[in-house]
Image 1 (tube, rainbow, N blue to C red):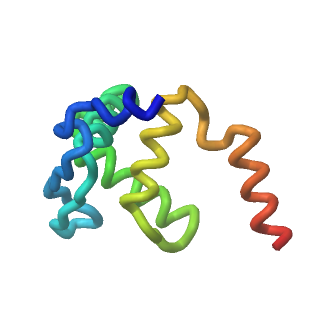
Image 2 (image 1 turned 90 degrees about the horizontal axis):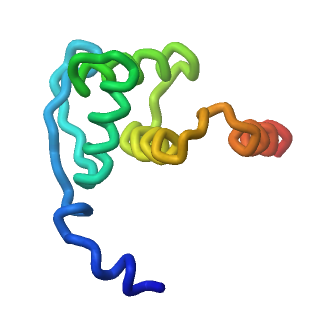
Length: 104
């Protein structure tokens, strides 16, 4: 079983740094190449001309909803996973996890 994953092309998980503008400030994000591919697809599926614009909009919305943006790179990775799985970020398992956090 592990051979399936061990044989993957190293370029797939190579770190890639891209410059983006978030909140009017230039910054860089470092993600694995596979996540950039998914982010490009996700941003196009949402009607954004560029991935940078999608990332900026996502950052703004997270800031508006939560008041702060913590671990943005991880948020992008999880967004990619949800997109790849065809799940909504508000699916029942995510909502259940949020309820557990509220109770704890």
